[in-house]
Every structure is written in C-alpha cells, then in structure tokens.
Image (cartoon, rainbow, N blue to C red; front, side):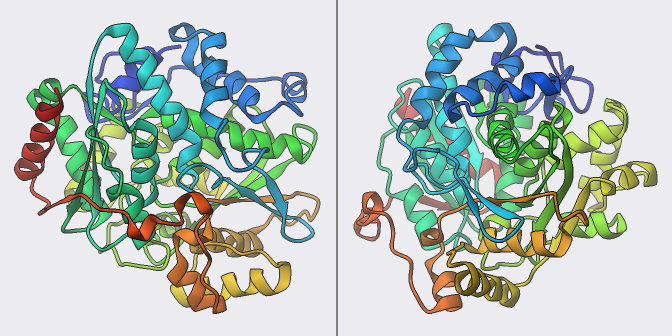
Length: 467
C-alpha cells in the first residue's frame, strides 16, 4: 500500500513512512493510493469477531507489506486489553432506533484512546526496527493530548510535546495531561485557541530544518495511522446492527473532521452507510459549509464542548481531495486560498456531492444542557456535552426510513466534563476509581505565546535534554 499527499508534490510513502512523517512535506495530508474494498460476503464473515481481531483485519490492508498481520494482531490485542469494558466499544440503545457507540472505556476516558493505544505500539515497532528516535509534537483541544501522552509515556525512543490552549480545556482534560511526570513528556499551554496550537504544529512541520533536526512525528489526526485506527469501531457497530444487509447512519460530534472521516472511510470500503451527520457547537464551520457552502474562519468561542472549539478542520482536506477527483494541484490551490483569505472556495459540484451524504447540525450551550437533561430523564443515560450534541443531531437529521438505525459516537465519559453535567442535571459525575486522585496529583507544564520561535525553542530544549 502506497500513500499520496493531498497536494500532489510529496513523494509517495508506505504505511511506516506515513506513520513517522505525519504531515507531507508539501503541507498536504496522506491518503491511500487506492482504497481497500470488501465484498458483502467478506463483511458478513467479520460479524461477531472480538474487537481487537476485527481491528487487525481492517487495518492490515492499509499497512500492506510494512507490517505482518500477526504482528498487527498482537498489537491490537495489547492495545485494547486494558479497556474498562469487555466489548471495548459497546453499543447502548437509547430509543427505538438510536444507539450510543461508547468509545470512552480506554485509559483516558475518550475516543482518542481507541487509536492512540495502537499508535504508540506502532511507533515503538517502527522505531525499534529502524534504530531511530523521534520527537512527537501535537495540538489538542482536550482529549488527543491525554490519550497521546498515555500511549507514549516512558517509551524510550519517543519524546512528546503537547500544545493545549490555556484555559480552554476542562480541568479534568488538563490534569490528565499535566500530571503525567514521565521524563519524555512535556506540555505547553498556549495563550490562544486550539487553532493557534494546530497552526504552530503545522508550522513546525513546514520548517524543514527544524523538522529534520528534531525528527518530528505527529499524533494528531493529520497522521493517517490515527484515522485508520478509528475505522474499525464504525464497522464494529454497523456489523452488529445488520450491515452489510442493513444500512446504518452515523451521527458524530466533530471539530477536526477526523472522527467522521473514519466513518466515511467505512462507507468507501463497502459498508452501506446511508447518512453521516455532523454535530457542531457554536464553532460550526462544518455545519455552515454543509448548509450553504460557507467554509469561512470565524473567531473560536469557548463552549461546554471544548473538544469541538475549532474553526479550522484539518481533516476536511482529505475529503476535499476526494471531492476534487484526487487532483493535488486543485486541492493545494483551494487550501492556499483558505489559509490566505479565511474562506475556502469549494466548487459547487464538490459541495453538492458532499451534501448528498453529510448533514450538519448546530447546538448551542443551553441546547446542549437541555439534551443532557433529556437523555437522563427519558433514557436514564448520562452523556457528556459532546455526545449530547451527537444525540440531538441524530434526532433532528435521522434518515426518513425508520428502519435505518442511527449510531451516535459517544466520544467522552461524562466525568471529563463535570461542570456541564452538573449544570444540566444537578449531579456531579465521579471519576472512575483509577482516576479518583486526579485533582491531588502534581501538575507540570510550561506557558507560551503562540510564537513559533518560542515554541520551537521549548521543543528543542525538551528533546535535547532527553536525547
């Protein structure tokens, strides 16, 4: 399996090369040269497999010759062994046709664990084979950071520096990052938004001398391996509900587009996905795009669902590349104007193709609290604010055919956002026992302005101290 850049100028790579590169040298994102496709009979044969086995079978076509199936199967077995539910990603029925796909049973209580626990092992395998060391830099709006840190802590060939927007994550999210005192982990609180953090990470990758010096790698969903590792849980849910002999719809609360892109990939691989619903908070650039082809950057506003407080959805570039007929030059031109002018000029034909499958929904903070309350009182289900946006979107935009089930990606444990949950229902959800002392743990992190030279100096200092 070879991978191409969405901007058409970077040399093709294999899976291991894409894993370690993260962002392509031309600023684009990697996608497989051709998509694996399974027949209906092949999908049926996967029904009922344990989650780790299903993951290995679906990810291996993307790895190709870079990784043996036996090695990958051992990694997925290890990655999910410590999850807090035997099903790994259980489906919970909410009403007659809606199901919550719980993706928060990993060590940091959020869906990012589903990919990160595997990604850490993939990095270790590749680096041991090459005898190399890398510096991972990442940006987080809350959950990616803790999941990446948990997956990479104490790994001898990895230094990790995570950027988060100061004061714009929940306290639980921040402490899950800053209380990990492993010597290979560093956190930087950026005085700005998640988009500022993400721009800094991309700028470091585009600084070729710094990238070479630090041997940079990525764990954000700009890294294709992250997206590939998220594909299995959508297949797992669809198969459990009757696919490929029954279509399904997915409702995904999303900011950076990576999670819903994995659901799109399942459809691209042959499962009958009828509709993809995108739930957004007040930072609703994706919903605005789907409603009126308005992909324009606005100021990021804090909300009760901070992991979605994003105005630049990086992974949309991958879908754009597909919508533009895999034309790298055209994709580069559109993205260049977007960064220069803050407005993405998506051709009408491409926009209409997107809206045939994707549907956007916006919910403000009062609506989010009301949905948490509704779920609690009608279904006895306690949802975090991101999941609540997904369930509200599912009710509003479910397919007309009532026989098509709607699966909502339940992306985080409610205890990660106790203030919002308490405001909604008057109860403060407790942390699981393994995190019960989180508020007493020592924190360690640096602060910085969103200045590339300042942040690069902090990254360099951390990597050199451990090198």
